[in-house]
Image (cartoon, rainbow, N blue to C red; front, side, top):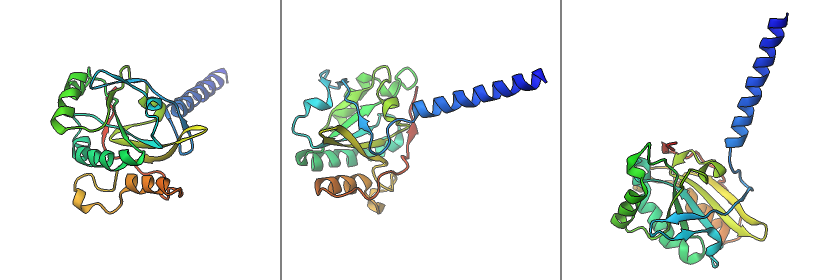
Length: 203
């Protein structure tokens, strides 16, 4: 009987620990207030969301150098920044990967890649991997659209950039563009969450 009670207690403890782990790593949901961050850009300057005084919101994208999914989206990310930065929604790219686990995602390689591709947006290094868990990002790329309000930066969309990573010409749903367009027109975002498709974040 004592063994049964002990086994039951252990089971409950494991379930409780698992639940705590899941909830603590869940990250932001639609409607969450996203905290600001202070991260180093590829030009060695420190960047925070609050520095962008004229922004109406932000297209925060967790991405990296090595992942083929991230690489496939680079031109589309540049296009998003060029289109929406002037309208108040700049792209903020963040590399969440541990460079000790993936050498191609070192800060120095980030600088090289940004120069090669002509990135028009900040490409920040999540040193110590402190920011991506707050957001709940799991893939590269993984998008969070934030709207600046009096309450703070409200999460309005989470997920993929569009519905076809492999072939831009075959895209039918441009999730990020649709969401930002809705916000710019003071409308409700119709598709608030989608499944991010990409490489797992290297920890």
